[in-house]
Length: 374
Image 1 (cartoon, rainbow, N blue to C red):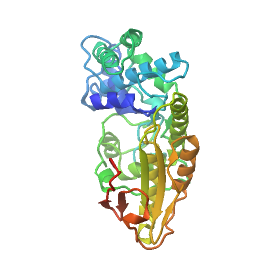
Image 2 (cartoon, rainbow, N blue to C red):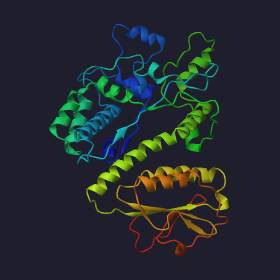
Image 3 (cartoon, rainbow, N blue to C red):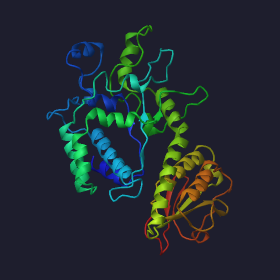
Image 4 (cartoon, helix red, strand yellow):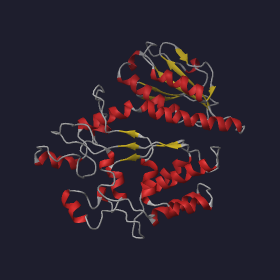
């Protein structure tokens, strides 16, 4: 949890995953309806965690701490009029909202229902701060983020409901709508291992549908393989939206760094195998990976992309400063990347500095004298 909180200080964007499993532990079941709601299938301890009540008895909640820290960093940025601030680079938050699954046999299977029908798991988000999480977040802001006492005090006073509303009020990415023309994708072995895992809880819109007891029970066993493939396809479908958010943040921070006369950062060279052996899924995965890595470059660096096969073909020819224009150009290159350089014949002398490269899944490292780290 310390790592996640520290990561917010060095991140441009915050993409919190909000779902039944993450928000239900933040919401208290109304005492006057508790027994009825539990009888209906809502959980008293969703994901094995006690629900928050906004009292000293609350346990620390990692998601709540992240939301509190992110809110404080964004408010500091806003108070500074959008200019660079000492305590972090965070520019924006973009929530990813996931609903509850429809079970097999439901007319809308394998789609998901609306997140807003299950957020909080039938509970109410306390209109009070959760002391343990608020104190931990405020302490982190003072000790690690160099935030002032005003930010720490605001964090101590922010209610659980206020922290949740600050994110759900944003126009984020909603993963319950599955376009009919969006093909399902294959899962990796690691992703296949997630089949049937997840927190229990009532699915959406069961009433009025003739489902067997087995189908109803399966709803509490996490996503099945088809639902996971659908979810992965939706995430891939929304990648351009994620990239657009990150690209805007990169442009703002790069402009701030240039205006402040920041010293140049490292030079980064991406070396991509585009030989015939990369045809099919390999080149698609390399394209997606390059798109993600481009958005993880440090502000102030310079970079280039070199494709190799029978020959080497750089994108720019020499490293260019990492800014909005170069990022857009490299992103277009990544999205359109195809196998086109035939057989693999890369030698270390054929690129200017090098090199950590992926070739047919094998990691090959050949550093030159002037390469400090890869």
